[in-house]
Image 1 (tube, rainbow, N blue to C red):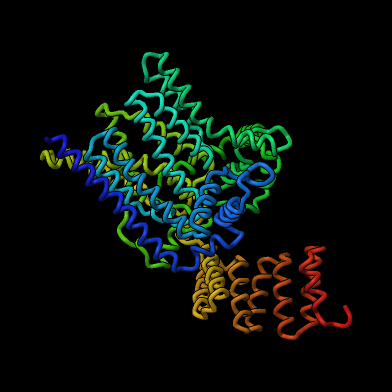
Image 2 (cartoon, helix red, strand yellow):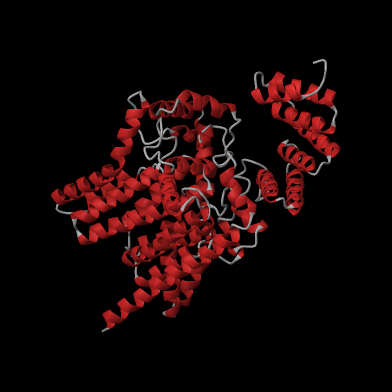
Length: 568
């Protein structure tokens, strides 16, 4: 009778937590779609969202083999989007719903994983944290791989635990397939570690070998078609899933922050060119760099490790903090953060080791996925797939504290709570990147500029004059934050141009030229303002300067021909 009651209780809880996770994400999706930045990210060629969206649209239009050439990025996410577009039509709303459904299902799987690894109470806590984990909610409503990778990570771990428990070949095959899908979404190096785990923990050894073989076969069932396709279209006999290897240098030049991407950095450009998309050349160059500057690289990796574990959600082209500040959404609710999860997870790991509860497979996933982020560079979306593994240990620490309080062991409980508070204080968001830069605002000036561009985009589509006022506000905030960058001045100049305030527009463009004097596009833009003002001689002067800096630019040549000046 008790077993039936417990099973019924589990079913009710699973239904509740699934619906809760999905409902909070639905609310967020409806809210966030009201703000221009969300859709602008998929329309502007500056962002990864645009690349995924274009690739998916191309595939969904009938090019299911992916066109010509090796995939630029791991292809699964583009095919995932393409499948949604094919079924539901071109709809980002449908993508966000599907991503939210997958995450909500992942919440249920996390309950099952944690219940199996520790106990049912820890499972309740883990699933509740994941359901209301702020960064997970944020990325479910973006055209980025983070949401899908996180789900596939949870699914792979769940299937492996089930395979080990049930001791059947089919589950090992499914586990390998899940890992293969994860690799096709973003590379990871889990395979050798999982195989080692199988060979060490399963007896007799012959059975372990068979399970490992089936697991590897499952993975390569998924990978082989992509490898074969890329081999054929490459024309060079190279075997690989994608050509994205050069992304390694983003966080691995000796002078990089390990967090931000500086495409103008000459060291980055030289190393990217030298590696030529080859894993072997990249590895050789990397070890040569370490040999030349061991102390610099030691500091770099110490900085990346610290930035991985502290509470800062490092932005790439999308800033979580900008969304939370500017848009009144559920992100302003008191949701769970990585800072809280990590501080309790450290305790959970220590407690599990001391109490002889050592979930080695979970530790392998946590170590490998965390380490792989540190090897590349630290950003919020790259850290998200490791978060569920931290949540598993976090939930055990929370359960342990509650259990000791329930048993009346107040002194032990207070000691553990004090440790949790200590870790929480220690892991405060570090905006200096471990002293790499002066303390900066949590929202970068470029985030403000991007939001201003999104408002301008909204104005051009819907004709909303209020959007231009909001765009100007973001430009002013960006300039207040960083007055030596040309971009907010240039965006502000464009806003004044749209408002027919030509003199103000010219003034802002000239301010931009102070900080970017050899940017041909700025000269072209200011020429356009003079043209609309009727000052053709000045328009001619600036357009010629643009062509001097960027010879044979067809747009500039066409603009020059349009200027009605008799002598050129």
